[in-house]
Length: 394
Image 1: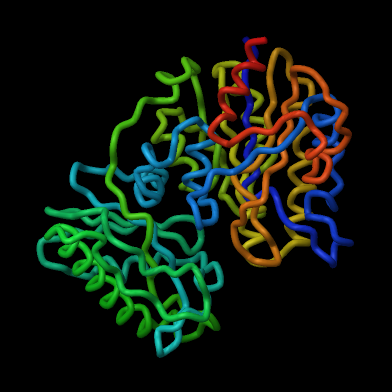
Image 2: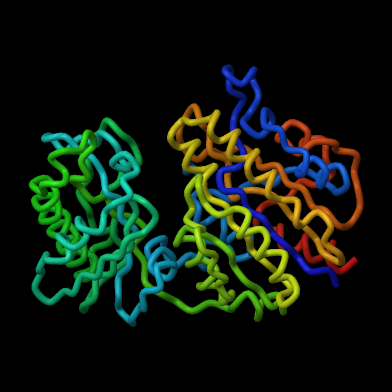
């Protein structure tokens, strides 16, 4: 059986953009190495997982990529973020993902990411002083504006709403219980109290007085409690490892029981250490049968409307792929978790291009959304592992 290298370029797909001559960033990018893999492999489309009426989320699409149905196996974004930040989760802990956010005096959202603020350590230290009776609050810095938050105490419920509408220009939401249980009502009350106290601290914090986009509010979502699932090894009998920069994806690898390979300078940002990640993935195939290599920044750039920078980052990925072009007895799979539309500045439901190199050709000459539509693969995301294993074994 061939070894498997799965490369996920987060937010890979996009829409045609007039300023790129009606091409997507991937179609406009110069990608000789990806094109080599496509020309000598088989290509097609992956239909991303999403709930009816919703756009795809990172946690759900990744679980689907690995064959774990999100409805059954998703513990909540908060759990995966906290795991990726190497924080221990105890029974009863409620975990959430947080965003530092900019709001105006009327609590209308100006920027959901506070300008993608990165230096947040002092803000976190200030927030850690919040006291709520009977509750311990643990706050950990995530990637740039992101946080992993644990509420430790008794009687917490994950069945509560988010205060994040995921839209700028609207007022922040209150957190509500999703059922009539005492636990859900108690949890919503505690979280609203925490958000109010945090806003009071943040809006008066000196650091924020000098910022064009002050990090003066917290948006919370992805409430969840840890639950055990069948590991990736138990499910597929493959010894696996995860290489990622951003905490969420490390958390997904950890949740599924993969070994984490830490790479110096791998940070989930456009300046991430791509060379180190790809070289380490090649080396790791000597020890492991399956490598999950995650590359984040294309998604962030598209969410900020930076389609030209997304194109250039895809070119940067391509230039660093040379060490894996001559792998022996291996299957290389390249796709995304979801598309991120640069003009809409959000995740979208467009199909994803995919290439699988190492078992046959199908005549596609370039790796792009347009060209991959001509390929022979058309896979629902939840079925990708099944198809990959079929090709690895044949």
